[in-house]
Length: 515
Image (cartoon, rainbow, N blue to C red; front, side, top):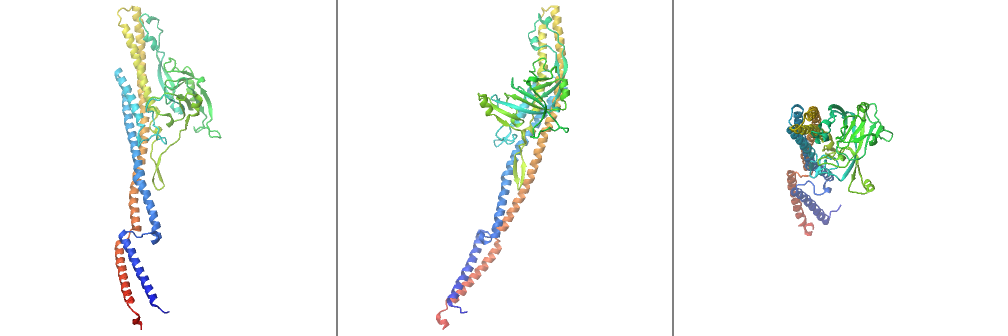
Protein backbone atom coordinates (compact mmCIF):
# COMPACT_ATOMS: atom_id res chain seq x y z
CA UNK A 1 0.00 0.00 0.00
CA UNK A 2 1.35 3.37 -0.96
CA UNK A 3 1.70 5.81 1.96
CA UNK A 4 1.23 9.36 0.81
CA UNK A 5 2.47 12.47 2.49
CA UNK A 6 -1.10 13.58 3.20
CA UNK A 7 -1.82 10.30 4.95
CA UNK A 8 1.21 10.76 7.16
CA UNK A 9 0.12 14.31 7.97
CA UNK A 10 -3.43 13.23 8.83
CA UNK A 11 -2.20 10.41 11.05
CA UNK A 12 0.22 12.76 12.68
CA UNK A 13 -2.53 15.28 13.47
CA UNK A 14 -4.85 12.54 14.72
CA UNK A 15 -2.19 11.17 17.06
CA UNK A 16 -1.32 14.63 18.32
CA UNK A 17 -5.03 15.35 18.96
CA UNK A 18 -5.49 11.99 20.70
CA UNK A 19 -2.53 12.59 22.95
CA UNK A 20 -3.69 16.12 23.68
CA UNK A 21 -7.22 14.91 24.47
CA UNK A 22 -5.82 12.29 26.85
CA UNK A 23 -3.68 14.91 28.54
CA UNK A 24 -6.64 17.29 28.77
CA UNK A 25 -8.81 14.57 30.38
CA UNK A 26 -6.11 13.87 32.94
CA UNK A 27 -5.72 17.58 33.57
CA UNK A 28 -9.50 17.92 34.19
CA UNK A 29 -9.44 14.89 36.47
CA UNK A 30 -6.56 16.38 38.45
CA UNK A 31 -8.12 19.85 38.64
CA UNK A 32 -11.65 18.65 39.63
CA UNK A 33 -10.59 15.66 41.71
CA UNK A 34 -13.37 13.61 40.05
CA UNK A 35 -12.78 10.28 38.37
CA UNK A 36 -15.20 11.09 35.55
CA UNK A 37 -16.50 14.34 34.12
CA UNK A 38 -19.61 13.03 32.39
CA UNK A 39 -21.56 9.73 32.46
CA UNK A 40 -20.19 8.64 29.10
CA UNK A 41 -16.67 8.59 30.56
CA UNK A 42 -17.62 5.49 32.59
CA UNK A 43 -21.32 4.51 32.71
CA UNK A 44 -20.76 1.96 35.49
CA UNK A 45 -19.14 4.55 37.77
CA UNK A 46 -21.91 7.03 36.89
CA UNK A 47 -24.73 4.58 37.75
CA UNK A 48 -23.05 3.56 40.99
CA UNK A 49 -22.53 7.23 41.86
CA UNK A 50 -26.25 7.96 41.41
CA UNK A 51 -27.22 5.06 43.68
CA UNK A 52 -24.71 6.02 46.37
CA UNK A 53 -25.77 9.67 46.26
CA UNK A 54 -29.44 8.64 46.61
CA UNK A 55 -28.66 6.37 49.54
CA UNK A 56 -26.56 9.03 51.25
CA UNK A 57 -29.31 11.61 50.73
CA UNK A 58 -31.81 9.27 52.40
CA UNK A 59 -29.37 8.60 55.23
CA UNK A 60 -28.95 12.33 55.76
CA UNK A 61 -32.73 12.75 55.85
CA UNK A 62 -33.06 10.05 58.52
CA UNK A 63 -30.02 11.09 60.54
CA UNK A 64 -30.29 14.87 60.36
CA UNK A 65 -34.08 15.44 60.24
CA UNK A 66 -36.35 12.48 60.97
CA UNK A 67 -34.52 11.09 64.01
CA UNK A 68 -33.89 14.46 65.73
CA UNK A 69 -37.56 15.39 65.18
CA UNK A 70 -38.70 12.04 66.57
CA UNK A 71 -36.37 12.37 69.56
CA UNK A 72 -37.68 15.85 70.35
CA UNK A 73 -41.28 14.57 70.21
CA UNK A 74 -40.40 11.66 72.50
CA UNK A 75 -38.46 13.93 74.89
CA UNK A 76 -41.56 16.10 75.34
CA UNK A 77 -43.70 12.99 75.86
CA UNK A 78 -41.38 11.40 78.39
CA UNK A 79 -40.99 14.66 80.31
CA UNK A 80 -44.78 15.00 80.62
CA UNK A 81 -45.13 11.38 81.77
CA UNK A 82 -42.39 11.74 84.38
CA UNK A 83 -43.99 14.91 85.71
CA UNK A 84 -47.33 13.11 85.87
CA UNK A 85 -45.76 10.23 87.80
CA UNK A 86 -44.30 12.68 90.32
CA UNK A 87 -47.68 14.38 90.76
CA UNK A 88 -49.40 11.03 91.31
CA UNK A 89 -46.81 10.24 93.98
CA UNK A 90 -47.81 13.45 95.76
CA UNK A 91 -51.48 12.43 95.57
CA UNK A 92 -50.52 9.02 96.95
CA UNK A 93 -48.87 10.74 99.92
CA UNK A 94 -52.04 12.72 100.66
CA UNK A 95 -54.15 9.57 100.39
CA UNK A 96 -51.84 7.76 102.79
CA UNK A 97 -52.09 10.66 105.20
CA UNK A 98 -55.87 10.71 104.99
CA UNK A 99 -56.23 6.96 105.39
CA UNK A 100 -54.10 6.73 108.54
CA UNK A 101 -54.02 10.08 110.34
CA UNK A 102 -56.89 11.67 112.29
CA UNK A 103 -57.15 14.93 110.38
CA UNK A 104 -58.58 18.21 111.59
CA UNK A 105 -61.23 19.90 109.46
CA UNK A 106 -58.78 22.53 108.23
CA UNK A 107 -56.27 19.82 107.28
CA UNK A 108 -58.90 17.91 105.35
CA UNK A 109 -59.93 21.05 103.49
CA UNK A 110 -56.30 21.75 102.63
CA UNK A 111 -55.85 18.21 101.32
CA UNK A 112 -59.00 18.52 99.22
CA UNK A 113 -57.76 21.76 97.62
CA UNK A 114 -54.33 20.25 96.95
CA UNK A 115 -55.84 17.11 95.40
CA UNK A 116 -58.01 19.17 93.05
CA UNK A 117 -55.01 21.30 92.06
CA UNK A 118 -52.86 18.21 91.45
CA UNK A 119 -55.61 16.61 89.36
CA UNK A 120 -55.85 19.70 87.16
CA UNK A 121 -52.08 19.84 86.80
CA UNK A 122 -51.92 16.17 85.77
CA UNK A 123 -54.55 16.61 83.09
CA UNK A 124 -52.93 19.82 81.88
CA UNK A 125 -49.77 17.74 81.24
CA UNK A 126 -51.90 15.87 78.72
CA UNK A 127 -51.89 19.03 76.59
CA UNK A 128 -48.11 18.95 76.18
CA UNK A 129 -47.18 19.83 72.63
CA UNK A 130 -44.16 19.78 70.35
CA UNK A 131 -43.86 22.42 67.63
CA UNK A 132 -47.57 23.19 67.96
CA UNK A 133 -48.63 19.54 67.75
CA UNK A 134 -50.28 17.90 70.77
CA UNK A 135 -48.31 14.73 71.52
CA UNK A 136 -50.98 12.64 73.29
CA UNK A 137 -53.87 12.97 70.82
CA UNK A 138 -52.95 10.48 68.10
CA UNK A 139 -53.68 11.72 64.59
CA UNK A 140 -55.66 14.68 65.94
CA UNK A 141 -52.49 16.66 66.69
CA UNK A 142 -54.29 19.99 66.39
CA UNK A 143 -56.88 19.07 69.05
CA UNK A 144 -55.85 19.23 72.74
CA UNK A 145 -56.33 16.22 75.01
CA UNK A 146 -58.27 18.26 77.57
CA UNK A 147 -60.50 21.31 77.30
CA UNK A 148 -58.31 24.37 77.73
CA UNK A 149 -61.28 26.52 78.76
CA UNK A 150 -64.77 25.66 80.07
CA UNK A 151 -66.92 24.38 77.18
CA UNK A 152 -70.68 24.91 77.17
CA UNK A 153 -71.32 25.08 73.41
CA UNK A 154 -70.74 21.40 72.68
CA UNK A 155 -72.86 18.36 73.44
CA UNK A 156 -71.50 14.84 73.26
CA UNK A 157 -73.34 11.55 73.11
CA UNK A 158 -70.76 9.17 74.58
CA UNK A 159 -70.69 5.38 74.35
CA UNK A 160 -68.60 3.89 77.12
CA UNK A 161 -67.64 0.22 77.58
CA UNK A 162 -67.40 -0.87 81.21
CA UNK A 163 -66.17 -4.21 82.50
CA UNK A 164 -67.89 -5.92 85.44
CA UNK A 165 -64.67 -5.62 87.43
CA UNK A 166 -65.19 -1.85 87.35
CA UNK A 167 -68.35 -2.13 89.51
CA UNK A 168 -67.35 -0.35 92.68
CA UNK A 169 -68.46 -1.70 96.05
CA UNK A 170 -68.31 0.98 98.70
CA UNK A 171 -70.16 2.35 101.71
CA UNK A 172 -72.48 5.30 102.16
CA UNK A 173 -74.16 6.66 105.27
CA UNK A 174 -77.92 6.75 104.90
CA UNK A 175 -80.94 7.61 107.08
CA UNK A 176 -79.28 10.66 108.61
CA UNK A 177 -80.90 14.01 109.23
CA UNK A 178 -81.96 16.02 106.21
CA UNK A 179 -79.45 18.93 105.98
CA UNK A 180 -82.30 21.34 105.25
CA UNK A 181 -84.01 20.36 108.53
CA UNK A 182 -80.86 21.13 110.53
CA UNK A 183 -80.31 24.44 108.75
CA UNK A 184 -83.84 25.58 109.67
CA UNK A 185 -83.70 24.05 113.17
CA UNK A 186 -84.81 26.15 116.13
CA UNK A 187 -85.22 25.22 119.81
CA UNK A 188 -88.95 25.30 119.31
CA UNK A 189 -88.89 22.79 116.43
CA UNK A 190 -86.24 20.48 117.91
CA UNK A 191 -88.79 18.32 119.70
CA UNK A 192 -90.86 17.78 116.56
CA UNK A 193 -87.90 16.81 114.34
CA UNK A 194 -88.23 13.21 113.16
CA UNK A 195 -85.64 10.90 114.66
CA UNK A 196 -82.76 9.79 112.46
CA UNK A 197 -80.84 6.52 112.60
CA UNK A 198 -77.69 6.88 110.48
CA UNK A 199 -76.29 3.58 109.27
CA UNK A 200 -73.79 2.25 106.78
CA UNK A 201 -75.14 0.89 103.53
CA UNK A 202 -73.23 -1.12 100.93
CA UNK A 203 -73.43 0.53 97.53
CA UNK A 204 -72.92 -1.21 94.17
CA UNK A 205 -71.94 1.46 91.72
CA UNK A 206 -71.07 1.82 88.05
CA UNK A 207 -69.04 5.01 87.87
CA UNK A 208 -69.11 6.71 84.48
CA UNK A 209 -66.11 8.69 83.27
CA UNK A 210 -67.90 12.05 83.58
CA UNK A 211 -70.05 13.79 86.15
CA UNK A 212 -72.49 16.69 85.72
CA UNK A 213 -74.22 14.99 82.83
CA UNK A 214 -76.89 16.68 80.76
CA UNK A 215 -79.97 17.34 82.85
CA UNK A 216 -82.82 15.39 81.31
CA UNK A 217 -80.44 13.83 78.79
CA UNK A 218 -80.80 10.32 77.46
CA UNK A 219 -79.03 7.30 78.91
CA UNK A 220 -79.07 3.69 77.75
CA UNK A 221 -77.56 0.73 79.57
CA UNK A 222 -76.93 -2.37 77.44
CA UNK A 223 -75.74 -5.80 78.49
CA UNK A 224 -73.80 -7.38 75.58
CA UNK A 225 -73.99 -11.09 74.93
CA UNK A 226 -70.67 -12.77 75.70
CA UNK A 227 -68.95 -15.94 74.54
CA UNK A 228 -67.63 -18.53 76.96
CA UNK A 229 -64.16 -16.91 76.85
CA UNK A 230 -65.61 -13.50 77.76
CA UNK A 231 -65.37 -11.96 74.28
CA UNK A 232 -68.31 -10.15 72.71
CA UNK A 233 -70.68 -12.36 70.73
CA UNK A 234 -71.01 -10.74 67.30
CA UNK A 235 -73.57 -11.31 64.57
CA UNK A 236 -72.73 -12.01 60.91
CA UNK A 237 -72.23 -8.27 60.30
CA UNK A 238 -69.69 -8.05 63.12
CA UNK A 239 -72.05 -6.14 65.42
CA UNK A 240 -72.61 -6.86 69.09
CA UNK A 241 -75.61 -8.77 70.28
CA UNK A 242 -77.33 -7.76 73.52
CA UNK A 243 -79.08 -9.66 76.28
CA UNK A 244 -80.79 -6.63 77.78
CA UNK A 245 -81.23 -2.94 76.96
CA UNK A 246 -82.52 -0.42 79.48
CA UNK A 247 -83.21 3.25 78.79
CA UNK A 248 -83.98 5.97 81.33
CA UNK A 249 -87.62 4.87 81.60
CA UNK A 250 -86.35 1.72 83.28
CA UNK A 251 -84.27 3.67 85.82
CA UNK A 252 -84.86 6.02 88.69
CA UNK A 253 -83.28 9.30 87.57
CA UNK A 254 -82.29 11.63 90.40
CA UNK A 255 -79.18 13.25 91.92
CA UNK A 256 -76.84 12.59 94.83
CA UNK A 257 -78.67 14.97 97.18
CA UNK A 258 -81.66 12.60 97.18
CA UNK A 259 -81.71 10.90 100.64
CA UNK A 260 -82.65 7.63 98.94
CA UNK A 261 -80.02 7.84 96.18
CA UNK A 262 -77.60 5.36 97.77
CA UNK A 263 -80.03 3.05 99.56
CA UNK A 264 -80.26 0.60 96.66
CA UNK A 265 -84.00 0.17 97.08
CA UNK A 266 -84.61 0.50 93.33
CA UNK A 267 -82.99 -1.84 90.80
CA UNK A 268 -81.20 0.94 88.90
CA UNK A 269 -80.73 4.53 90.06
CA UNK A 270 -79.04 7.03 87.73
CA UNK A 271 -77.47 10.10 89.36
CA UNK A 272 -77.04 12.84 86.75
CA UNK A 273 -74.87 15.14 88.88
CA UNK A 274 -72.25 12.53 89.83
CA UNK A 275 -72.45 10.28 86.75
CA UNK A 276 -73.16 7.18 88.84
CA UNK A 277 -75.43 4.21 88.25
CA UNK A 278 -76.43 2.63 91.57
CA UNK A 279 -77.49 -1.03 91.45
CA UNK A 280 -79.53 -2.95 93.94
CA UNK A 281 -77.98 -6.05 95.51
CA UNK A 282 -80.14 -8.28 93.30
CA UNK A 283 -79.07 -6.48 90.13
CA UNK A 284 -75.44 -6.65 91.17
CA UNK A 285 -75.70 -10.40 91.72
CA UNK A 286 -77.36 -10.75 88.32
CA UNK A 287 -74.81 -8.64 86.43
CA UNK A 288 -71.62 -9.20 88.44
CA UNK A 289 -70.01 -11.17 85.56
CA UNK A 290 -71.36 -9.00 82.74
CA UNK A 291 -69.95 -6.24 80.61
CA UNK A 292 -71.81 -2.98 80.08
CA UNK A 293 -72.23 -0.53 77.25
CA UNK A 294 -73.53 2.81 78.47
CA UNK A 295 -74.55 5.63 76.15
CA UNK A 296 -75.27 9.02 77.72
CA UNK A 297 -75.32 12.77 77.01
CA UNK A 298 -73.00 15.43 78.39
CA UNK A 299 -73.26 19.11 77.50
CA UNK A 300 -70.99 21.01 79.87
CA UNK A 301 -67.25 20.53 80.43
CA UNK A 302 -64.91 22.10 82.94
CA UNK A 303 -61.41 23.35 82.20
CA UNK A 304 -58.86 20.49 82.07
CA UNK A 305 -61.59 17.88 81.59
CA UNK A 306 -60.63 15.14 79.13
CA UNK A 307 -62.15 15.47 75.65
CA UNK A 308 -64.40 12.46 74.88
CA UNK A 309 -63.30 12.03 71.24
CA UNK A 310 -59.86 10.85 72.34
CA UNK A 311 -61.30 8.09 74.53
CA UNK A 312 -64.68 6.91 73.31
CA UNK A 313 -66.80 6.49 70.25
CA UNK A 314 -69.04 9.53 70.46
CA UNK A 315 -71.05 12.13 68.57
CA UNK A 316 -70.27 15.83 68.93
CA UNK A 317 -73.00 18.41 68.35
CA UNK A 318 -72.57 22.16 68.13
CA UNK A 319 -75.14 23.83 70.43
CA UNK A 320 -74.64 27.20 68.74
CA UNK A 321 -76.68 25.78 65.85
CA UNK A 322 -80.23 26.48 66.98
CA UNK A 323 -82.04 24.29 64.45
CA UNK A 324 -81.98 20.71 65.86
CA UNK A 325 -82.19 19.15 62.38
CA UNK A 326 -79.25 21.19 61.13
CA UNK A 327 -77.36 20.48 64.38
CA UNK A 328 -77.84 16.73 63.92
CA UNK A 329 -76.90 16.97 60.25
CA UNK A 330 -73.62 18.71 61.07
CA UNK A 331 -72.79 16.44 64.02
CA UNK A 332 -69.31 14.89 64.01
CA UNK A 333 -69.02 11.16 64.67
CA UNK A 334 -65.83 9.85 66.28
CA UNK A 335 -64.85 6.19 66.33
CA UNK A 336 -62.24 5.08 68.81
CA UNK A 337 -59.23 3.46 67.15
CA UNK A 338 -55.52 2.95 67.62
CA UNK A 339 -53.66 5.99 66.26
CA UNK A 340 -49.92 5.48 66.19
CA UNK A 341 -47.73 8.18 64.70
CA UNK A 342 -44.75 6.43 63.09
CA UNK A 343 -41.60 8.01 61.68
CA UNK A 344 -39.42 6.38 59.04
CA UNK A 345 -36.06 6.31 60.79
CA UNK A 346 -34.08 3.98 58.51
CA UNK A 347 -34.41 2.08 55.25
CA UNK A 348 -37.74 0.19 55.53
CA UNK A 349 -37.86 0.84 59.29
CA UNK A 350 -40.69 2.78 60.96
CA UNK A 351 -40.93 3.55 64.67
CA UNK A 352 -44.01 4.71 66.59
CA UNK A 353 -43.07 7.84 68.54
CA UNK A 354 -46.29 8.74 70.36
CA UNK A 355 -48.16 7.68 73.46
CA UNK A 356 -51.93 7.98 73.21
CA UNK A 357 -53.67 9.87 75.97
CA UNK A 358 -55.89 6.99 77.00
CA UNK A 359 -52.77 4.91 77.73
CA UNK A 360 -51.52 7.38 80.33
CA UNK A 361 -54.17 9.93 81.39
CA UNK A 362 -57.29 8.12 82.52
CA UNK A 363 -60.63 9.35 83.77
CA UNK A 364 -60.39 7.03 86.78
CA UNK A 365 -57.69 9.21 88.36
CA UNK A 366 -59.87 12.31 88.41
CA UNK A 367 -62.96 10.37 89.44
CA UNK A 368 -61.08 8.84 92.40
CA UNK A 369 -60.04 12.29 93.53
CA UNK A 370 -63.64 13.46 93.11
CA UNK A 371 -64.73 10.63 95.44
CA UNK A 372 -62.18 11.69 98.06
CA UNK A 373 -63.20 15.34 97.85
CA UNK A 374 -66.88 14.35 98.10
CA UNK A 375 -66.18 12.21 101.19
CA UNK A 376 -64.33 15.13 102.81
CA UNK A 377 -67.21 17.48 102.00
CA UNK A 378 -69.74 15.02 103.46
CA UNK A 379 -67.78 14.77 106.71
CA UNK A 380 -67.31 18.55 106.88
CA UNK A 381 -71.02 19.09 106.24
CA UNK A 382 -71.89 17.03 109.31
CA UNK A 383 -69.40 19.05 111.37
CA UNK A 384 -71.13 22.23 110.23
CA UNK A 385 -74.51 20.82 111.26
CA UNK A 386 -73.02 19.92 114.64
CA UNK A 387 -71.78 23.52 114.98
CA UNK A 388 -75.31 24.72 114.23
CA UNK A 389 -76.75 22.57 117.03
CA UNK A 390 -73.95 23.60 119.41
CA UNK A 391 -74.82 27.24 118.90
CA UNK A 392 -78.44 26.48 119.75
CA UNK A 393 -77.33 24.60 122.87
CA UNK A 394 -75.38 27.67 124.02
CA UNK A 395 -78.68 29.52 124.42
CA UNK A 396 -79.22 29.99 128.17
CA UNK A 397 -82.97 30.42 127.73
CA UNK A 398 -83.55 26.82 126.60
CA UNK A 399 -86.10 24.77 128.42
CA UNK A 400 -85.14 21.34 129.72
CA UNK A 401 -87.24 19.67 127.02
CA UNK A 402 -85.61 21.75 124.29
CA UNK A 403 -82.15 21.07 125.67
CA UNK A 404 -82.87 17.34 125.80
CA UNK A 405 -84.13 17.31 122.20
CA UNK A 406 -81.14 19.29 120.94
CA UNK A 407 -78.76 17.05 122.89
CA UNK A 408 -80.29 13.94 121.28
CA UNK A 409 -79.93 15.55 117.85
CA UNK A 410 -76.33 16.46 118.68
CA UNK A 411 -75.61 12.87 119.74
CA UNK A 412 -77.10 11.46 116.53
CA UNK A 413 -75.12 13.93 114.41
CA UNK A 414 -71.95 12.97 116.27
CA UNK A 415 -72.59 9.31 115.43
CA UNK A 416 -73.15 10.27 111.79
CA UNK A 417 -69.92 12.29 111.82
CA UNK A 418 -67.93 9.32 113.11
CA UNK A 419 -69.46 7.07 110.47
CA UNK A 420 -68.74 9.50 107.66
CA UNK A 421 -65.19 10.04 108.83
CA UNK A 422 -64.70 6.26 108.86
CA UNK A 423 -66.11 6.12 105.33
CA UNK A 424 -63.82 9.02 104.37
CA UNK A 425 -60.77 7.10 105.59
CA UNK A 426 -61.85 4.10 103.55
CA UNK A 427 -62.24 6.31 100.48
CA UNK A 428 -58.71 7.58 101.11
CA UNK A 429 -57.61 3.94 101.30
CA UNK A 430 -59.33 3.21 97.99
CA UNK A 431 -57.51 6.25 96.64
CA UNK A 432 -54.22 4.60 97.58
CA UNK A 433 -55.07 1.56 95.47
CA UNK A 434 -56.34 3.74 92.65
CA UNK A 435 -53.19 5.89 92.63
CA UNK A 436 -51.04 2.74 92.61
CA UNK A 437 -52.90 1.62 89.49
CA UNK A 438 -52.59 5.05 87.89
CA UNK A 439 -48.88 5.22 88.64
CA UNK A 440 -48.38 1.74 87.20
CA UNK A 441 -50.19 2.85 84.04
CA UNK A 442 -48.07 5.98 83.67
CA UNK A 443 -44.86 4.10 84.47
CA UNK A 444 -45.70 1.47 81.85
CA UNK A 445 -46.20 4.23 79.28
CA UNK A 446 -42.94 5.87 80.37
CA UNK A 447 -41.08 2.58 80.13
CA UNK A 448 -42.54 1.92 76.69
CA UNK A 449 -41.53 5.34 75.32
CA UNK A 450 -38.12 4.94 76.96
CA UNK A 451 -37.58 1.60 75.25
CA UNK A 452 -38.51 3.06 71.88
CA UNK A 453 -36.24 6.04 72.54
CA UNK A 454 -33.33 3.65 73.19
CA UNK A 455 -34.08 1.87 69.93
CA UNK A 456 -34.02 5.24 68.21
CA UNK A 457 -30.62 6.02 69.71
CA UNK A 458 -29.25 2.69 68.47
CA UNK A 459 -30.64 3.43 65.03
CA UNK A 460 -29.04 6.87 65.13
CA UNK A 461 -25.65 5.33 66.01
CA UNK A 462 -25.98 2.83 63.18
CA UNK A 463 -26.91 5.58 60.73
CA UNK A 464 -23.89 7.62 61.79
CA UNK A 465 -21.68 4.64 60.93
CA UNK A 466 -23.51 4.06 57.66
CA UNK A 467 -23.18 7.73 56.79
CA UNK A 468 -19.38 7.48 57.06
CA UNK A 469 -19.33 4.21 55.13
CA UNK A 470 -21.47 5.54 52.28
CA UNK A 471 -19.38 8.72 52.14
CA UNK A 472 -16.23 6.57 51.83
CA UNK A 473 -17.84 4.40 49.14
CA UNK A 474 -18.91 7.46 47.21
CA UNK A 475 -15.40 8.90 47.50
CA UNK A 476 -13.83 5.65 46.32
CA UNK A 477 -16.23 5.54 43.39
CA UNK A 478 -16.06 9.19 42.27
CA UNK A 479 -12.81 10.72 43.50
CA UNK A 480 -9.73 10.58 41.34
CA UNK A 481 -6.48 9.01 42.62
CA UNK A 482 -4.28 12.10 42.52
CA UNK A 483 -1.00 10.15 42.58
CA UNK A 484 -2.02 8.00 39.63
CA UNK A 485 -3.44 11.04 37.89
CA UNK A 486 -0.17 12.99 38.23
CA UNK A 487 1.89 10.02 37.02
CA UNK A 488 -0.45 9.43 34.11
CA UNK A 489 -0.51 13.14 33.31
CA UNK A 490 3.29 13.32 33.20
CA UNK A 491 3.37 10.24 31.01
CA UNK A 492 0.73 11.72 28.71
CA UNK A 493 2.64 14.98 28.58
CA UNK A 494 5.81 13.11 27.56
CA UNK A 495 3.93 11.24 24.85
CA UNK A 496 2.36 14.46 23.61
CA UNK A 497 5.72 16.23 23.42
CA UNK A 498 7.22 13.20 21.68
CA UNK A 499 4.41 13.28 19.10
CA UNK A 500 5.09 16.97 18.52
CA UNK A 501 8.80 16.28 18.01
CA UNK A 502 8.07 13.44 15.59
CA UNK A 503 5.63 15.65 13.76
CA UNK A 504 8.23 18.37 13.51
CA UNK A 505 10.63 16.03 11.79
CA UNK A 506 7.98 14.84 9.36
CA UNK A 507 6.59 18.25 8.56
CA UNK A 508 9.94 19.92 7.82
CA UNK A 509 10.75 17.48 4.96
CA UNK A 510 10.37 19.01 1.47
CA UNK A 511 9.97 17.64 -2.09
CA UNK A 512 13.70 17.83 -2.60
CA UNK A 513 14.17 15.30 0.23
CA UNK A 514 12.34 12.73 -1.93
CA UNK A 515 14.08 13.50 -5.27
